[in-house]
Image 1 (cartoon, rainbow, N blue to C red):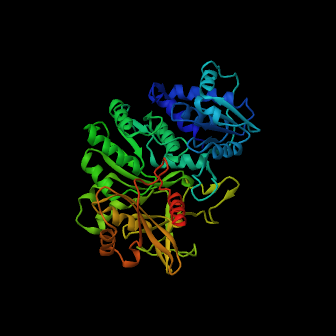
Image 2: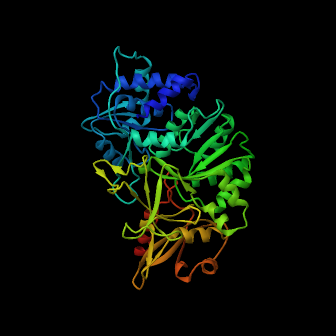
Image 3: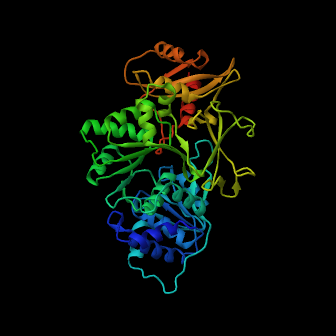
Length: 495
C-alpha cells in the first residue's frame, strides 16, 4: 500500500475539507498529481527539497509517491559544505529549493535545481497529461540522519512502513472538521513527515509555521484555533515562558504531544499546571521506525501527576507502552540475552512499521529486530523508560553510568535551568563524570554535588563542574553532547 492511497481515500471521502491553509484535500491531490507528472519528465531518481515549511512540502511528498520516487528533504541548517555533500548524494534528482536558498547549492552532476516559485508556477499552469499513470517504487522517503556521531546515513522508509504506522495509530477521518494541527518541526524530521500522512488520513487541517519561534507559535495557535500540536522538549519550555508572559491561555488547544528528546519532569509538570485543559502525550520513536513506537497517554500523564505512589509517579518520566502492533525487548550487551523487568539494557523493536534500513544496508537481524542504540528498561506494568543513547553511557571503573539519571536528579535542584552530564577521560577510572550546568540562581559545586550524592551513589556524583550560559541543541531538541565534549576538550587543552 502506497502513502498516496492515504491522500486518495481522504480526497474521495472528504475532498472539500481543508488540508493546508485554504487548500482542500481534493486540491492537494490534484496539485500533487500535476507535480508528479512534471517530475516524471525530469528523468530523476529522487525528489529532494531544501526549504522551510509550507504547502509545497506535502505537495512534494505525495507527488514523489505518485511518481514512484523517494522524497528526500534536506537540512537547510547545515553549513554549505555539508549541505552540498548531501545534495551530491541525491543524484540523479530534481531538487526544489526556497528561492533564497538556491544560491547555496553548487553545481552537481545529475542534480536539477528548481526554485520554489518556479516550481509553483509550473504546477499552477500545468494540465494533467492525457493517459498519465502513477509510477512504481517501494521507497517513499529518504531521511538523512543528523550525523551527530559521524557521516549522515540515509534512512530508508518504504511505503509499507509508513502506511502501517499511520493506519495503526490514526482513525480514518477521525478528526472533526474544525480540528487543526500546528506543525513547526522541519520537513527533514520524521515528525514532519508523519504529521502530513496522519493529517491526511485523519482528515485534520495542518497549520505550518516556517520555523519555530515561541511567540509566533503561541500567536499562531491562538489565531488559527489550533487544537493539536507536536513539539520537542526544548520547544515546550520556551512556549510555556511565552504563554506566561503574554497571558495566552491557548484555550482552543486540546492535545499536545512531545518527543524527540528527554523531557525533564519539571517541564511537563509545569505544562500540566499551566494548561490543565490540554491532553499531553509523550511519543517515543525513531526515524528508522517510521515515527512513534511507544506512547504515554493523556490518562497516564494524569494518573502519574496526581499519584503519591512512587512507582506510578515516576511514569511521568517514561515514554509509556509500546503500540499494539509492535514488540519491544530489552537486551544485554551481547545483543541476544533478553533482560528481565527492571533491568537496563538496549531497546530492541520489531513490527511492520520498522524499517531498520539505510540506503544499501539492512540493519535488522534475521528475525526482524532493530537495535535502537537507546538504553532503557521496562517496569512491571510494561512502561518503557528510555535512558538515552548508549553512545553517551559513561564507563567509570567498569561501571556503566547513565547521564540521564544524573541530569534528572540535578534538574530537581531549584537553581538548575538546564544540565548536561557526560564522561571525560580519566587516568585512574577510565572516565570521570562531568556536569555542564546552566543555572538560574547562584549555586556552588559542592551544594550540587551534595544534592546528587543524597539521591544517587557517590560514584554517580559529578567530579568536574562547568557553568555555561546555554547548552547546544539541534532544531529537533537533541542535546549535542559531542559538541559539548569538543568544547570542553579544547578548554582543557588550552588550560
